[in-house]
Image 1: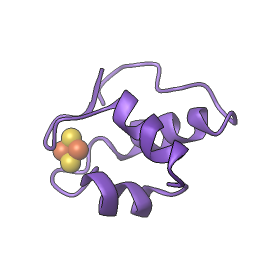
Image 2: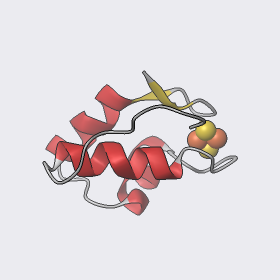
Image 3: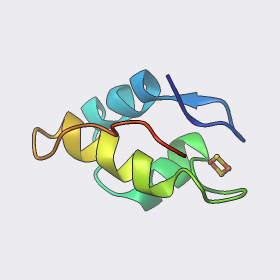
Image 4: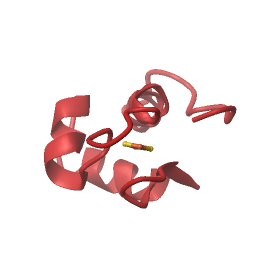
Length: 64
Ligand code: FES
């Protein structure tokens, strides 16, 4: 699914970035551009990143 619509970034891309070492939203901003436009995706992106690290469930959908 698309997490960041502005930059066409999917949850799979975020998980791949996590596999390559991304640990923070700033890491995702640098590597993928997540959250650099409207910013509505940041909570969901954090959730996907945390899920990739095994800490939390991924974004459950909603407005993000
Ligand atoms: S949806 Fe990610 S910056 Fe707009």
